[in-house]
Length: 121
Image 1 (cartoon, rainbow, N blue to C red):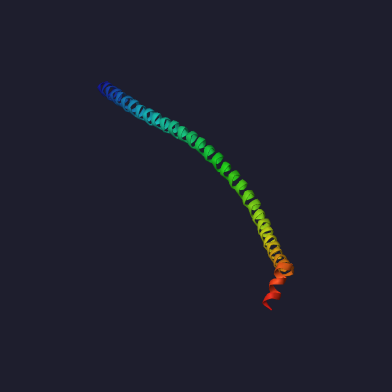
Image 2 (image 1 turned 120 degrees about the vertical axis):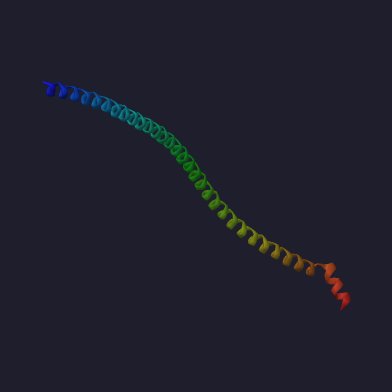
């Protein structure tokens, strides 16, 4: 009987120690699980913030793309206007040249200038 009694006491002690160890392990697992949950919450919060920032950047980029498109259109219009102005300037230069020639011809054909030529001759 002593053997059984000694075994019983020994197994009860081992059982109690095992319970204590298991409780300690359970607490540590609970702590780890709690830490993992906190990390997941933090990651989720950062993910949401990053998504918001991404959407803001996306909107900004789209706005810049629209602005660039408008600028490209404006530049194309300005290029056309400059080409028209160059043509107009060339036409004006030709007109001024013709008017000068006509004016010189007119001066040469007037009596005042014609008489001056006769006096010189």
